[in-house]
Length: 586
Image (cartoon, rainbow, N blue to C red; front, side, top):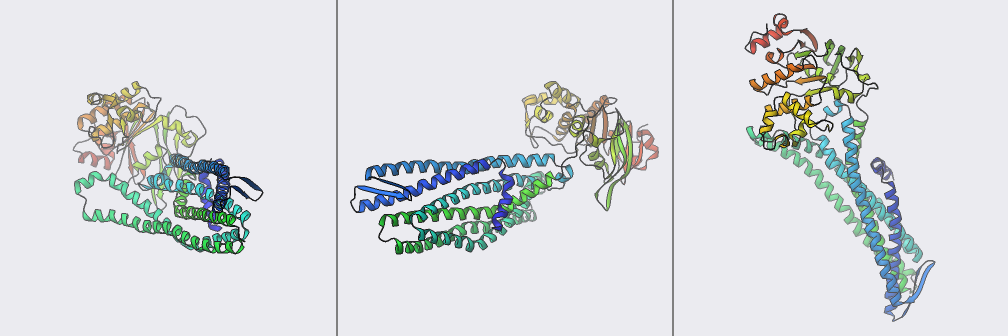
């Protein structure tokens, strides 16, 4: 019972909207059981009548009885057979429908929970984790829901047939009931071992999915360096780690029903022996009980198989439930107020740490006026990326606050912030779709004029027109028609298409040649005075267009001044300029 309660506790959150279907399933199962029991009793009675050459048949079950000719009785039997077939079709359809809708609902639920979760939760996951949840774990969970449906239908039919057996022959029904209970008790240890194997399988599936995702991401590198034996062994080990619990799970999942069937047949023999002692020569009743006993044990086997399958899938459900709780318990922080026009943006005494013993930012403060172009420079690990993530509201400060017009940015609605602030990452990501789709990026309110204007400002419009279908050319992450520099400029166009008030670029020109970088910088120059720019770069040539450059060292603002001033006051900026082969701006 404890296992049953645990199983239901794992399943119940995933049965949202399915309870009416389960009630309908119970009703249909009762009707199917009655139709089948009546049909079996009728068949046994007709067979007995034919064996004695009788032309009038008297058959019944408890208070329900019928006396008619053989032909009429057979016609009633045919009607019952057709009715049972229709009910069985419903019993097959309802669980299938439950599974299909559960798969879609669970995927929507998990996707919504993931997209609404705070960025630190999503950023902490390895590649492949979410993919495994969306595929293998949801597939297993939806199959568990199908198991609930089929098991429930089999259980209800089992008890319906059992009641029919009680009506026909009480001793046989008692033997059958006791036998079924004994069978379930005897097989539970095997079921627990199955659950343990399935738990290991769930864990190894997650690790395997992560490795597969890395294989895809590193395909270019392995093509260059070659898939060494060490690399192959690493992948093979993940495959073998899945193989071992998969073998145990599949073996136990097949062995438990097989053992049940063998024991059930033995118990059927014992039940028949008990019936023979009390049948008193009633051949028709004896035949009906034999048929019903056999069919009842079949349904008991189906119940056992459903429970066994459920045991196999509960670890997947547990992991899925844990992920949903993790996402939903850490939602994105939402403000309550409308975002006004952005006049100033800055940090006030901001502190942040990924680990408590290693602060990334310490008491950082600065203020930027609307329309300023601010460069962000500093050595690797100084905190530049953290500043970007805080500006984008991907993370929240541990202390201090990010301010807009002197007000904590957390007071404002997040979606309005997203509409006003755009970002061009260092590593450009394209979706499989047209060029226009990639620039629009799921913002249906953007017009064709917005798309083309953004492409022009990103210096990619003329190249797009030279492609086979222009803006309708299909591109993707590895589409051969798109170079690294072109992907970077497509992502720049994506950022510019929404006419942002703040534009943050993280090494956004690092993949461009000198000519393209110059033209993109010209486009950015045109935004000065209207759009607030944050340009993260190690290249003094890219920072030279900025009004001021923020030099970050050890998580603090060391300097915030014009590039010309930094050439004489900042050791880091002087060194970067010299390494770049220039003397810095005047």
